Image (cartoon, rainbow over all chains, first blue to last red; front, side):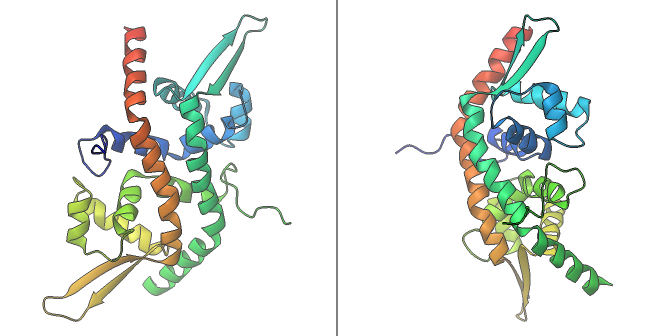
Length: 122
Length: 122
């Protein structure tokens, strides 16, 4: 057994930056929106309610650069462009969904905790 | 079966903000550092290499406010303060660890993808 090559607890390890990027809310939601198969830009703006064109463009470019998403342009009239998860991107769906599930199932308790904290500090 | 009460794909749902907070790199690493049991502030600064006192304080306060971490002060000389995950916080350990595992196991491929992208755009 060799030592793990990457360790986000070390400040110089690039995995710390990767972790931060994939934990970003837009990344989580866009990867989740692509989990079911290829999607067009417009589909993604509809599924990820409230994302701006600029933020969606930035998020998709970062995911393409990381090798998690491919962008395919079809020679049709009008031209069609589709975004799709790569195998590496698909591997991320499960962990991100677990995070979503945690957030939605514990949201009520977290809101109660906020109210308690606000009462105590009032 | 009732509809899910919270949905991070909706822009007005508080779970979107919660998702963003728990996906933040310092949150991921601090929760991971607390996974094994109670820790003192100093232990955490050592485990999460490079975190500033200010950032660790902010991260712990946010986690306390969310009800994910408790802060206990022991009446000793010198006073001892320990941070510990609540049950809700412990539920988050598995999902965050899955995210860490994804990041460390795919880091090499992501770095290769960056090199490819930089060559293509050069």
